[in-house]
Length: 163
Image 1 (cartoon, rainbow, N blue to C red):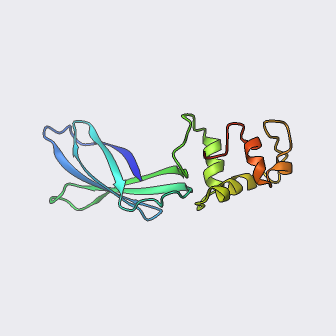
Image 2: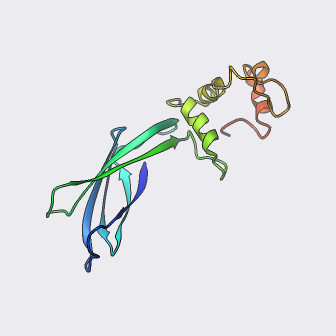
Image 3: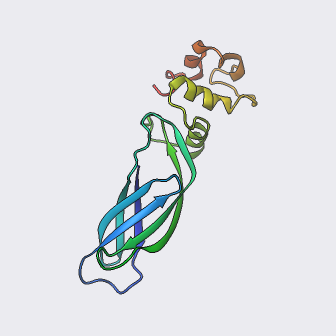
């Protein structure tokens, strides 16, 4: 997992490039690290986690807290910079659409969290709707067809979910 962060400098503008080591400890146990140079107004970093997320596994961190610290290597100890919070959605595969709507991604990742097989992922997502009167694209009741494997092409007019 990679994160992008920006730290604004609250000291006088620097006249020389100063290396700054940044560490972030995530509430999920991941450690993010980067060393960048402090510029005229701040520090723009891209930090990568020390632990890779499990491949082909849906996940949802609500919320992921990252506790940020920084130091000048060899000159200072780490100083707390603050904490950032974000929701993080981890999809099973690379999304096939450019429009990722928050509600759709939230329902999908939140209800399929921890699942790794396509059939289990689809079942986890559809389970969210079992107590609702959900209508499919062809106006049939969802609970009448979703239990059968052959219903998937009807539920998704453009093919199976995830394909």
